Length: 321
Image 1 (cartoon, one colour):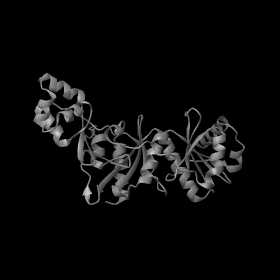
Image 2: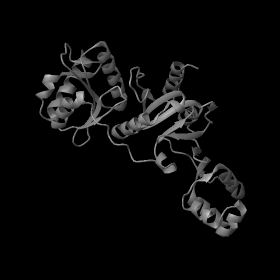
Image 3: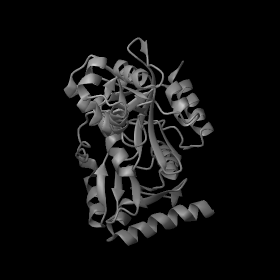
Image 4: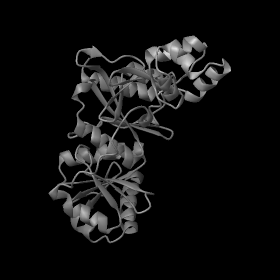
Protein backbone atom coordinates (compact mmCIF):
# COMPACT_ATOMS: atom_id res chain seq x y z
CA UNK A 1 0.00 0.00 0.00
CA UNK A 2 1.34 3.43 -0.92
CA UNK A 3 1.84 5.95 1.87
CA UNK A 4 -0.71 8.26 0.24
CA UNK A 5 -3.33 5.48 0.29
CA UNK A 6 -2.46 4.68 3.90
CA UNK A 7 -2.93 8.34 4.91
CA UNK A 8 -6.28 8.35 3.10
CA UNK A 9 -7.42 5.17 4.86
CA UNK A 10 -6.41 6.42 8.31
CA UNK A 11 -8.08 9.78 7.67
CA UNK A 12 -11.33 8.07 6.60
CA UNK A 13 -11.24 5.81 9.67
CA UNK A 14 -10.82 8.78 12.01
CA UNK A 15 -13.68 10.63 10.31
CA UNK A 16 -15.88 7.53 10.68
CA UNK A 17 -14.95 7.55 14.37
CA UNK A 18 -16.30 11.10 14.72
CA UNK A 19 -13.06 13.05 14.50
CA UNK A 20 -12.75 16.34 12.68
CA UNK A 21 -9.57 15.95 10.61
CA UNK A 22 -7.34 18.66 9.15
CA UNK A 23 -6.05 18.72 5.62
CA UNK A 24 -2.93 16.65 5.11
CA UNK A 25 0.29 18.59 5.80
CA UNK A 26 1.50 18.15 2.24
CA UNK A 27 4.55 20.37 2.66
CA UNK A 28 8.00 19.81 4.10
CA UNK A 29 9.36 19.81 6.69
CA UNK A 30 6.61 18.18 8.72
CA UNK A 31 6.57 16.23 11.95
CA UNK A 32 2.93 15.11 11.65
CA UNK A 33 0.56 14.43 8.76
CA UNK A 34 -2.84 15.37 10.16
CA UNK A 35 -4.46 16.84 13.25
CA UNK A 36 -7.69 15.24 14.44
CA UNK A 37 -10.15 16.23 17.18
CA UNK A 38 -13.08 14.45 18.80
CA UNK A 39 -14.51 16.45 21.67
CA UNK A 40 -11.62 17.35 23.94
CA UNK A 41 -9.35 14.64 22.49
CA UNK A 42 -6.83 16.16 20.08
CA UNK A 43 -4.38 14.01 18.13
CA UNK A 44 -1.31 14.90 16.09
CA UNK A 45 -0.90 11.90 13.81
CA UNK A 46 2.15 10.71 11.89
CA UNK A 47 1.32 7.96 9.38
CA UNK A 48 4.07 5.65 8.11
CA UNK A 49 4.37 2.36 6.27
CA UNK A 50 7.56 1.54 8.16
CA UNK A 51 7.86 3.10 11.61
CA UNK A 52 11.67 2.83 11.48
CA UNK A 53 11.52 6.06 9.45
CA UNK A 54 10.31 7.85 12.60
CA UNK A 55 13.45 9.49 13.96
CA UNK A 56 14.34 11.15 17.24
CA UNK A 57 14.13 14.72 15.94
CA UNK A 58 10.58 14.15 14.70
CA UNK A 59 9.61 12.47 17.95
CA UNK A 60 10.92 15.40 19.96
CA UNK A 61 9.06 17.88 17.79
CA UNK A 62 5.78 15.97 18.10
CA UNK A 63 6.12 15.81 21.88
CA UNK A 64 6.83 19.53 22.09
CA UNK A 65 3.82 20.30 19.90
CA UNK A 66 1.70 18.00 22.05
CA UNK A 67 2.62 20.11 25.08
CA UNK A 68 2.02 23.46 23.36
CA UNK A 69 -1.32 22.42 21.81
CA UNK A 70 -2.54 20.08 24.57
CA UNK A 71 -2.58 17.24 22.08
CA UNK A 72 -1.55 13.59 22.06
CA UNK A 73 1.13 12.76 19.46
CA UNK A 74 0.71 9.30 17.92
CA UNK A 75 2.21 7.32 15.08
CA UNK A 76 0.04 4.91 13.07
CA UNK A 77 2.14 2.50 11.02
CA UNK A 78 2.16 -0.89 9.37
CA UNK A 79 5.46 -2.50 10.22
CA UNK A 80 8.91 -2.29 11.73
CA UNK A 81 11.67 -3.69 9.56
CA UNK A 82 9.98 -6.64 7.84
CA UNK A 83 7.56 -7.48 10.65
CA UNK A 84 3.98 -6.23 10.85
CA UNK A 85 3.01 -4.40 14.03
CA UNK A 86 0.98 -6.70 16.25
CA UNK A 87 -2.72 -5.90 16.67
CA UNK A 88 -3.82 -4.39 19.98
CA UNK A 89 -0.24 -3.67 21.03
CA UNK A 90 1.12 -0.17 21.69
CA UNK A 91 4.78 0.41 20.85
CA UNK A 92 6.84 3.47 21.72
CA UNK A 93 9.35 5.37 19.61
CA UNK A 94 11.16 8.39 21.08
CA UNK A 95 8.45 8.78 23.71
CA UNK A 96 5.54 8.69 21.22
CA UNK A 97 2.94 5.86 21.20
CA UNK A 98 2.89 3.82 17.99
CA UNK A 99 0.27 1.32 16.84
CA UNK A 100 -1.21 -0.30 13.75
CA UNK A 101 -4.32 0.82 11.82
CA UNK A 102 -6.15 -2.25 13.20
CA UNK A 103 -5.34 -1.16 16.75
CA UNK A 104 -6.49 2.37 15.88
CA UNK A 105 -9.75 0.98 14.48
CA UNK A 106 -10.43 -1.05 17.62
CA UNK A 107 -9.61 1.94 19.82
CA UNK A 108 -11.43 4.71 17.97
CA UNK A 109 -14.28 2.88 16.20
CA UNK A 110 -14.98 -0.07 18.50
CA UNK A 111 -14.02 1.70 21.73
CA UNK A 112 -11.73 -1.18 22.74
CA UNK A 113 -8.37 0.13 23.99
CA UNK A 114 -5.22 -2.01 23.71
CA UNK A 115 -4.12 -4.03 26.74
CA UNK A 116 -0.53 -4.75 25.73
CA UNK A 117 2.48 -2.53 25.21
CA UNK A 118 5.93 -3.34 23.93
CA UNK A 119 9.04 -2.45 25.92
CA UNK A 120 12.62 -3.72 26.03
CA UNK A 121 12.47 -7.40 26.84
CA UNK A 122 9.03 -8.19 25.45
CA UNK A 123 5.32 -7.46 25.76
CA UNK A 124 3.76 -6.21 28.98
CA UNK A 125 0.39 -5.34 30.50
CA UNK A 126 -0.80 -3.07 33.30
CA UNK A 127 -1.74 -5.01 36.43
CA UNK A 128 -4.37 -3.55 38.74
CA UNK A 129 -2.31 -3.91 41.92
CA UNK A 130 -5.14 -3.14 44.34
CA UNK A 131 -7.42 -5.69 42.69
CA UNK A 132 -4.65 -8.30 42.73
CA UNK A 133 -4.04 -7.72 46.46
CA UNK A 134 -7.79 -8.02 47.16
CA UNK A 135 -8.05 -11.29 45.21
CA UNK A 136 -5.02 -12.74 46.99
CA UNK A 137 -6.29 -11.74 50.44
CA UNK A 138 -9.78 -13.11 49.67
CA UNK A 139 -8.12 -16.50 49.21
CA UNK A 140 -6.00 -16.06 52.33
CA UNK A 141 -2.87 -16.52 50.27
CA UNK A 142 0.41 -15.05 51.44
CA UNK A 143 2.76 -13.23 49.09
CA UNK A 144 4.96 -16.30 49.22
CA UNK A 145 2.14 -18.65 48.20
CA UNK A 146 1.26 -16.57 45.16
CA UNK A 147 4.93 -16.22 44.29
CA UNK A 148 5.28 -20.01 44.36
CA UNK A 149 2.26 -20.43 42.07
CA UNK A 150 3.74 -17.96 39.57
CA UNK A 151 7.33 -19.12 39.83
CA UNK A 152 8.59 -15.67 40.81
CA UNK A 153 9.97 -14.12 43.98
CA UNK A 154 7.89 -12.82 46.89
CA UNK A 155 9.38 -9.39 46.22
CA UNK A 156 8.17 -9.49 42.60
CA UNK A 157 4.60 -10.22 43.70
CA UNK A 158 4.82 -7.31 46.14
CA UNK A 159 5.91 -5.06 43.26
CA UNK A 160 2.95 -6.22 41.14
CA UNK A 161 0.64 -5.15 43.95
CA UNK A 162 2.48 -1.83 44.20
CA UNK A 163 1.82 -1.12 40.53
CA UNK A 164 4.68 -2.75 38.62
CA UNK A 165 3.55 -4.07 35.26
CA UNK A 166 3.88 -7.70 34.27
CA UNK A 167 4.72 -9.74 31.21
CA UNK A 168 1.82 -11.08 29.16
CA UNK A 169 2.62 -14.60 30.37
CA UNK A 170 2.46 -13.61 34.05
CA UNK A 171 -0.76 -11.65 33.50
CA UNK A 172 -2.40 -14.66 31.85
CA UNK A 173 -1.25 -16.90 34.71
CA UNK A 174 -2.71 -14.49 37.28
CA UNK A 175 -6.07 -14.34 35.51
CA UNK A 176 -6.16 -18.14 35.25
CA UNK A 177 -5.39 -18.49 38.96
CA UNK A 178 -8.03 -16.05 40.13
CA UNK A 179 -10.47 -16.51 37.26
CA UNK A 180 -10.89 -12.74 37.09
CA UNK A 181 -9.59 -9.92 34.85
CA UNK A 182 -6.71 -8.16 36.59
CA UNK A 183 -5.36 -6.05 33.75
CA UNK A 184 -6.15 -2.46 32.79
CA UNK A 185 -5.88 -1.02 29.27
CA UNK A 186 -3.12 1.22 27.95
CA UNK A 187 -4.58 4.72 27.96
CA UNK A 188 -3.23 6.02 24.65
CA UNK A 189 -4.90 9.41 24.96
CA UNK A 190 -3.94 10.16 28.54
CA UNK A 191 -1.34 8.63 30.77
CA UNK A 192 1.00 6.72 28.46
CA UNK A 193 3.88 8.03 30.56
CA UNK A 194 2.67 5.60 33.22
CA UNK A 195 3.70 2.58 31.15
CA UNK A 196 7.10 3.51 29.81
CA UNK A 197 10.21 5.36 30.82
CA UNK A 198 10.55 8.65 29.02
CA UNK A 199 12.48 11.86 29.25
CA UNK A 200 10.80 15.14 30.06
CA UNK A 201 9.53 17.19 27.14
CA UNK A 202 12.53 18.15 24.98
CA UNK A 203 13.65 21.77 25.13
CA UNK A 204 12.66 24.22 22.40
CA UNK A 205 15.08 24.39 19.46
CA UNK A 206 16.92 27.63 18.84
CA UNK A 207 15.11 30.05 16.56
CA UNK A 208 16.52 30.22 13.06
CA UNK A 209 18.56 33.43 12.64
CA UNK A 210 16.11 34.55 9.95
CA UNK A 211 13.25 34.21 12.45
CA UNK A 212 14.78 36.32 15.21
CA UNK A 213 13.12 39.60 14.27
CA UNK A 214 9.62 38.14 14.22
CA UNK A 215 10.29 36.22 17.46
CA UNK A 216 11.53 39.44 19.10
CA UNK A 217 8.42 41.38 18.07
CA UNK A 218 6.05 38.65 19.26
CA UNK A 219 7.93 38.39 22.55
CA UNK A 220 7.78 42.16 23.03
CA UNK A 221 4.04 42.02 22.37
CA UNK A 222 3.67 39.64 25.31
CA UNK A 223 3.74 36.21 23.65
CA UNK A 224 5.87 33.28 24.69
CA UNK A 225 7.24 31.92 21.42
CA UNK A 226 8.12 28.26 20.92
CA UNK A 227 10.10 27.77 17.69
CA UNK A 228 9.56 24.66 15.59
CA UNK A 229 11.82 22.99 13.05
CA UNK A 230 9.63 20.32 11.44
CA UNK A 231 6.18 21.86 11.18
CA UNK A 232 4.12 23.77 8.60
CA UNK A 233 4.47 26.80 10.91
CA UNK A 234 7.59 28.48 12.28
CA UNK A 235 6.43 28.71 15.90
CA UNK A 236 3.62 28.23 18.38
CA UNK A 237 3.04 31.48 20.28
CA UNK A 238 1.00 31.80 23.48
CA UNK A 239 -0.23 34.92 25.22
CA UNK A 240 0.58 35.61 28.86
CA UNK A 241 -2.22 33.52 30.39
CA UNK A 242 -2.18 30.82 27.67
CA UNK A 243 -5.76 31.76 26.76
CA UNK A 244 -4.88 32.17 23.08
CA UNK A 245 -2.49 30.07 21.04
CA UNK A 246 -1.33 31.32 17.65
CA UNK A 247 0.43 29.35 14.92
CA UNK A 248 2.93 31.73 13.35
CA UNK A 249 4.80 31.66 10.06
CA UNK A 250 6.70 34.13 7.91
CA UNK A 251 8.45 34.41 4.57
CA UNK A 252 8.00 36.16 1.27
CA UNK A 253 4.44 35.72 0.04
CA UNK A 254 4.94 33.08 -2.64
CA UNK A 255 2.75 30.20 -3.86
CA UNK A 256 4.52 27.97 -1.32
CA UNK A 257 3.78 30.49 1.45
CA UNK A 258 0.11 30.60 0.44
CA UNK A 259 -0.04 26.79 0.56
CA UNK A 260 1.58 26.80 3.98
CA UNK A 261 -0.89 29.43 5.23
CA UNK A 262 -3.83 27.30 4.04
CA UNK A 263 -2.46 24.27 5.90
CA UNK A 264 -2.02 26.42 9.02
CA UNK A 265 -5.67 27.48 8.74
CA UNK A 266 -6.85 23.90 8.46
CA UNK A 267 -4.75 22.79 11.43
CA UNK A 268 -5.94 25.82 13.41
CA UNK A 269 -9.59 24.93 12.91
CA UNK A 270 -8.92 21.48 14.39
CA UNK A 271 -6.58 22.57 17.18
CA UNK A 272 -8.77 25.60 18.03
CA UNK A 273 -5.90 28.01 17.52
CA UNK A 274 -5.51 31.12 15.41
CA UNK A 275 -2.80 31.56 12.82
CA UNK A 276 -0.84 34.48 11.40
CA UNK A 277 1.62 34.66 8.53
CA UNK A 278 4.09 37.54 8.45
CA UNK A 279 5.10 38.68 4.95
CA UNK A 280 7.04 41.55 3.44
CA UNK A 281 4.08 42.71 1.34
CA UNK A 282 0.46 41.58 1.39
CA UNK A 283 -2.31 42.37 -1.11
CA UNK A 284 -5.00 40.67 0.98
CA UNK A 285 -5.99 40.36 4.62
CA UNK A 286 -5.90 36.60 5.08
CA UNK A 287 -5.64 33.16 3.48
CA UNK A 288 -8.46 30.82 4.50
CA UNK A 289 -8.48 32.27 8.01
CA UNK A 290 -4.73 32.74 8.44
CA UNK A 291 -4.23 36.48 8.95
CA UNK A 292 -1.55 38.15 6.84
CA UNK A 293 0.49 40.86 8.55
CA UNK A 294 3.28 42.81 6.90
CA UNK A 295 6.63 42.75 8.66
CA UNK A 296 6.78 46.54 9.11
CA UNK A 297 3.22 46.57 10.41
CA UNK A 298 4.02 43.84 12.92
CA UNK A 299 6.93 45.89 14.27
CA UNK A 300 4.48 48.72 15.09
CA UNK A 301 2.24 46.48 17.22
CA UNK A 302 3.23 46.86 20.85
CA UNK A 303 1.04 44.60 22.96
CA UNK A 304 -0.87 41.33 22.93
CA UNK A 305 -4.32 42.88 22.63
CA UNK A 306 -3.32 44.94 19.60
CA UNK A 307 -1.87 41.94 17.78
CA UNK A 308 -4.76 39.68 18.80
CA UNK A 309 -7.28 42.19 17.43
CA UNK A 310 -5.47 42.44 14.08
CA UNK A 311 -5.33 38.65 13.72
CA UNK A 312 -8.97 38.17 14.67
CA UNK A 313 -10.33 41.03 12.55
CA UNK A 314 -8.52 39.90 9.40
CA UNK A 315 -9.48 36.27 9.79
CA UNK A 316 -13.12 37.10 10.51
CA UNK A 317 -13.25 39.68 7.71
CA UNK A 318 -12.23 37.02 5.17
CA UNK A 319 -14.65 34.45 6.60
CA UNK A 320 -17.48 36.98 6.23
CA UNK A 321 -16.50 37.90 2.68
